[in-house]
Image 1 (cartoon, rainbow, N blue to C red):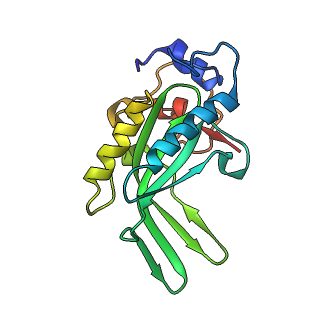
Image 2 (cartoon, rainbow, N blue to C red):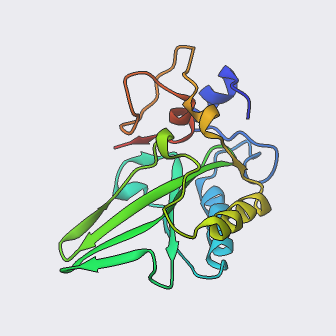
Length: 189
């Protein structure tokens, strides 16, 4: 996707930008987008030895311009449990709700009896995977994204600074200035 001011501003304004259904709808229809992304989640779930957890609920509050999909190994090899605290290493996908694009990187989820926490995807982690044997799973995830016509945005592209005036309603940007990443993947609480 090009660094086009009009396109990026449209995405931040929560308009759909895409050439195929449902991203080519003139009327915004969040249910159609989430249904389409849910089909991707189903495709990801068919990958051998992959457990998939998708958050369509904007972290429980506010609005996220993306669906957060955490993928980890079913066989337990990416999970560690110590004294009731579970740490899961995996791959975090952000799938944009306004354009048919996605980004991924390594991430970690922690769980315990009183709740848990997870990491956000940052530009520093784009296109990384956890240590260990992840290449086959990474390739299968990329195949599924391609099967559903999602472009995978590169780290270099997402790190580019925004060189035009824009206000992005996000609380997850990495610093005071905006990057292209912030246009596609923002969360306002």
